[in-house]
Length: 152
Image (tube, rainbow, N blue to C red; front, top):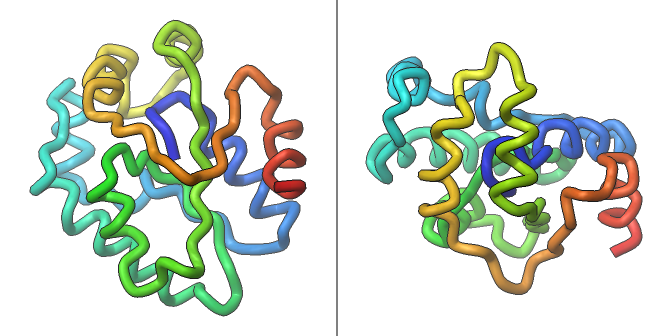
């Protein structure tokens, strides 16, 4: 979990590959209305996110025995609770943490992503940093982050 541009997809794909489990990018499960709003620079509301979070929770429940890695912003505690509902004891949260400046620079280099750099401010404003989770510094390369996750 983490704000857009923190490396969730890159780290998540590598981790899933390394663990031989399914990788799920939460962005792929946004309804078209959410993508349209974000493309126009309009931040999503909690109401916009609820069906999306429920879909992701259902996917996680379906893969509880085989395991999976889900890359999702999960910016607020209420979102994390909704994502892990009914499977709390099986979920391990990894927070990819970086500064606004680090992530803004990364986002300036991204192409063809619906979440533009201008939306980053709203993500940091919404972010409720999680407690009692594995926190990784995004200054490390994705491969190093994956190794640290596996050793934790």
